[in-house]
Length: 183
Image (tube, rainbow, N blue to C red; front, side):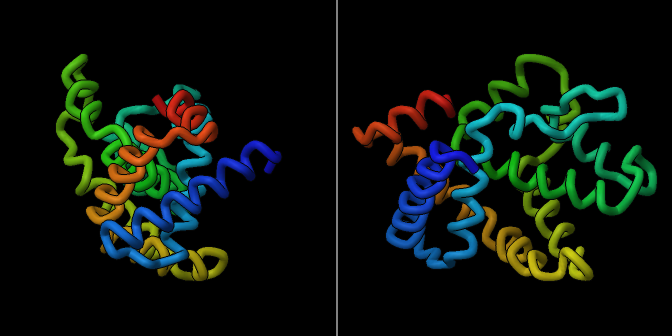
């Protein structure tokens, strides 16, 4: 992690922790740290659109991501791939529903997409729940966090929306730069 990313991560950790604890009563440092890392990562577009299909095409449609995650009837070659894609679906839907809720329907209406048939919140919650069930071997330690993210998904959406509102009113230089990156 470079120094700019580290500063951004620290900024988000402070903002998320304060906002979540004071406004919605979520005082879970593990959730705060995870969401701060997600926000930091998603400041880079290649992270936001990192899931690719077999042809190498970047997927931005949640419906297509759901199809991509299926190891039984879909193209996912393994359960590890299912976990990777499902984790991203949880992050992606949480990010958009919390930080850019107004864009969800606008983007869906611009063109025909599988996503128009998908309930964003349900897809995110379900994806985190599925990730939480990967609770053995190298995934055992992280599994409970994804269970909490699934259970508190709507709270996290609300909290991220409040973080977005905080960013809108902040005059801090990092806040201005962050708004420019995210918007």
